[in-house]
Length: 105
Image (cartoon, rainbow, N blue to C red; front, side, top):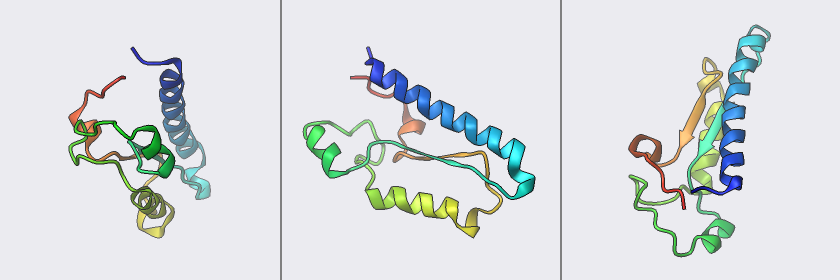
């Protein structure tokens, strides 16, 4: 079973995705766009220390994302290259969502 923190984290991510869709519907004509970057595991020093023995074989790419890979996705969404993208969630998870289900503990 998941912890209450996992439930809250999942609810917050879903709330941001819903907010992005609402902002898009309401403010797009004013040139305001909103998108969400949804990440799987990211190899930061803190995460690596906390999950030193965690297995990542459930991720099709077999590894956590680098912080640069997440930054690159964010820069793309903030750039003119994504000027017609709004109200979306860009999933940066090495294919984990496609493979599902996720480990819970």
